[in-house]
Image 1 (tube, rainbow, N blue to C red):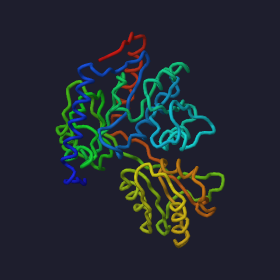
Image 2 (image 1 turned 90 degrees about the horizontal axis):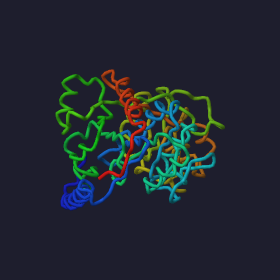
Image 3 (image 1 turned 60 degrees about the vertical axis):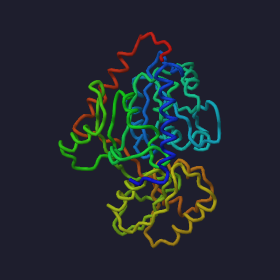
Image 4 (image 1 turned 120 degrees about the vertical axis):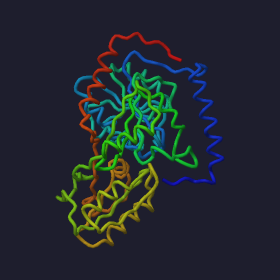
Length: 356
């Protein structure tokens, strides 16, 4: 991982501000609200790159058939404000790219965005929602979730620093607020010694449950199915233009290289809003590649590309997204699922008041 050593003094000041804020919540000077329905938070200590959205998707698949379910996000980099409910006319500009991705994949789940999460939950309760999944809200302490799930990337278990020198939003001590901790993006072939070493690196209590997960890539899906070609796999001789605007593109780069060595990568920062010059660059780069050729992107980037004008018809015909899904390690899929089910069933009927 890269640490900007020259920014460490700024990280110290940032850390002091974070410490003061957390102490004010811990002491009850700043208030946290609890709700009378299960509110499950999925978040992280670092900025981007932990695989948060696939873990949220796992919860949605798990719960959508048994409960009237909603997922609530801030809606990062959206053009709207306040409470917005996703509908058939919503775009990534209205919701943000990650909520739009969730809405596209789970049309039977209520997807909403609101920068004020407390008001957002109140809106959802008025719609009869029974369970709320909070997306990326571990630091949003104005809500006290009924269950806190914290994701930590395997490669950043040790050695990371606070913003702006590193990528941590708060110190590792924040882990104490989590009920469940998931070490994500684990490398293949981990041994029991590797699992034990990872667990020793985390300041866990006996009440916290630890899981390990990997990202599993699925088959190609067309970004524009109405005009898509019939390509379904990446062949060794295929020229691949990879387009990414995510925090850590290395995993998808490695996945594409497993199938083809003819890779051209156009990379932007996380949640990048594609501009006309970007689209022109995508079109020109794709046109310069030898055939057969395809464009591959992430689901999050696809959510933005779908509503960005200017892509050539040739690019649209050969544009595919590469979905990912959580793979739980050590055979603990059922244990994780049952812990979620038990939490929701044991929560029913509780009388919840404002918590400090």
